[in-house]
Image (cartoon, rainbow, N blue to C red; front, side, top):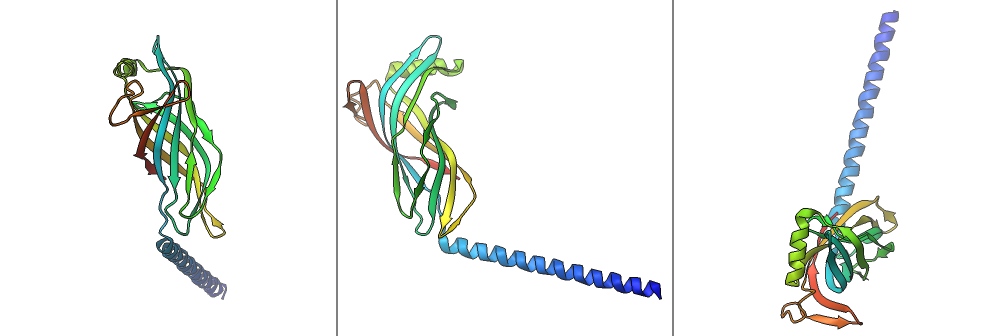
Amino acid sequence: MSVKECSHHKNKKGKLLRKLCACFLILSFIVLLTFLIIWAILQPRKPKFTLQDATIYSFNVSAPILLSSNFQVTIISHNPNKRVGIYYDKLDTFATYRSQQITYFTGIQPVYQGHKENNVWSPFVYGTNVPVAPYNGQLLQQDQSNGAISLLIRMNGRVRWRVGTWISGRYHIHVTCPAYIPFGNKQNSLYPGIPVGGSGMKYQLSQRCSVNV
């Protein structure tokens, strides 16, 4: 008699477990389907960035291959979404030369970007006696002698998406803007410089940046 009762209890537990698993699978499917439908309706897209201009105040290479630089860049961010807002929780701007960071990080204040809105940032990017790797030193000095240099202006940080009252978790964002700056050639026909203040030279770039989120 006791053996039959044990078998009966085991069957009941097995049926209950199967029902729970089935309910979990159905619930997971509904949640996933809802997410996909919402995603298809909203069609969220990553923001677009443009490097509008760069103003060079100083750019000097000294022995033993130390770089001191000071320039200001204007970067425009555009939110292409109609229903999705973007929180920029953190953005650090800096410059690199041939994969080497050559300036300090310059932070940008956190900001919310609404639907179809633009944000314009003009951070100063600078570094004092930044050591340059030996394999880049000769090329950097050569570029300085030629009067033009190719840099990458980068922005790294974290963003969140907002739909109505719902706000997502944080995502990493990486922005890369190529910048060809003829800082020693004021008469360059493609990138003519505009004098700013006593020592600055402003160059209009209007360069589209790549964005990874």
